[in-house]
Amino acid sequence: MSRSPRFFPRKLHSRHAGWVMPLLLSILMTCVVSMIITLRTVGLAPGVCSLWLGAWALSWLIAFPTLLLALPLVRRLTALLVARA
Image (cartoon, rainbow, N blue to C red; front, side, top):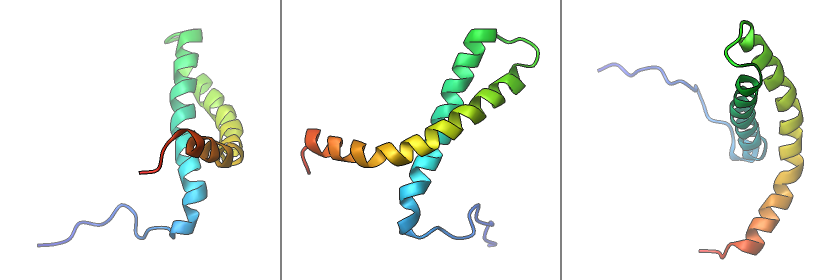
C-alpha cells in the first residue's frame, strides 16, 4: 500500500505558534467579515470579487499586527475571567 503525500512536508516548531495562530485567525476572520461587508454594500455586482479582495487585503494588513499586539492582553484578561482546569 503506497502512502499518500502529506500536504505539509513538516511541521513548524512549537515556538512559532505565537505568530502562526494569529496569522491564520486574521486571514480567516478578515476574509469572512470583508466578504459580508462587501456583499452587503455592493451586492453581487460585476467586479465584486476584486472589490472584496481589495477590502480583504487592507483589513488583513491592519488585523494581523493588531492581533499580534492584542493577544498578550487578551490572554491576561482571559486568565482573569476563566478558572484553570
